[in-house]
Amino acid sequence: MDEAAKLTRRGFLKVAAGAGGALLVGFYLPGCSRSDPPAARAQDPQGSGTVRRDTGDQPDGYAPNAWIRVDPDNSVTLMVASSEMGQGVMTSIPMLIADEMNADWSKVRAEFAPVNKVYNNPLFGRQATGGSTAIRGYWHPVREAGAAARELLVAAAAQRWGVSPDSCSSAHGHVL
Image (cartoon, rainbow, N blue to C red; front, side, top):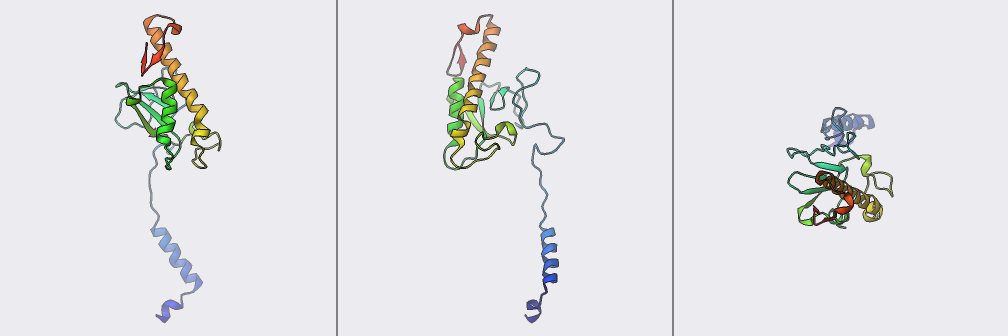
């Protein structure tokens, strides 16, 4: 017992450094490697609308912007850039986007956004959560994203049908 009490400062630092080195753990974060493609893009540079996100085995969907993906089964995936900390951002942010899109809420699902500056909270200038800023910060950008997606979908339908976009409207996830 007396020997343990006589541990010198230098001896302690050696033991602590050895223990710290033993605790070093490696891990992989998808999207952080230089060889990984970007997790999300604000728009597709070719204008085709097909943007591949890290969706596992799911097929590519139409992604008019970084916030929204419409999959081949007509489900709509909406990205949420704030952490869920009990204030309901996984419902409120998707509701803002879906409302502007006129999306069918029964086919909407939400996912946490990957790390990317396109998802920065305008109030913080970075992708962060705190201070009850999710709705205040994202209110305008996500509504614009939803409205832009609605207009793109209406324009695409009008082009396919050979009619003016002004003669089309949207409701409940359909272009009429």
